[in-house]
Image (cartoon, rainbow, N blue to C red; front, top):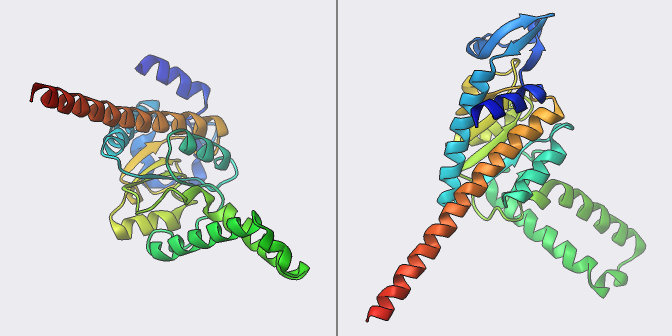
Length: 246
């Protein structure tokens, strides 16, 4: 797996960091060299971080835990949405709302309002409102859908956050830290690795880099869920055998 993964990472440009003038000195252990004023990330460190993160996410998923994917920068949004949907996890791909974790009850109330608006839009009742009110409700629905749709399945706080660029998503990282929620992050040379529990050193601006890392993490979650399914099937089989024996 490792040689194939190394090739994929290099082809995706995961090893290209930021300009040396913009670096965070705490990222020194993850930097291999400097070339043309750009820091080159040590791919061995990227693989170590990725493997640790995959192991942890597989464990979380096997215990039916929730993993919230967060990536609101333009390069990450589409990938985060696609990969989180593929592995059946909630996501935030447009805008992080303050209090998403620390004021979770309010977020759940807003999700209930979103569902209420959807029912209204799909019924004939909307026609009974004035044109002005219909327009206002439509704007409210579109804004709420954009900000909250990815969290519909998040009925409780997640066990883990997967973040693309912790510097960009510092508000999400802060909320997770306050609540003791584990953070996994694709982190570039301009960020502080101490703010993240499981850093994955790598280019967090390249679409291909983000896609590759997000795919790997989503695959780990799917593997964990498959383990859970297999265990449930095994338990059902054991119970059936016990009943037959009786």
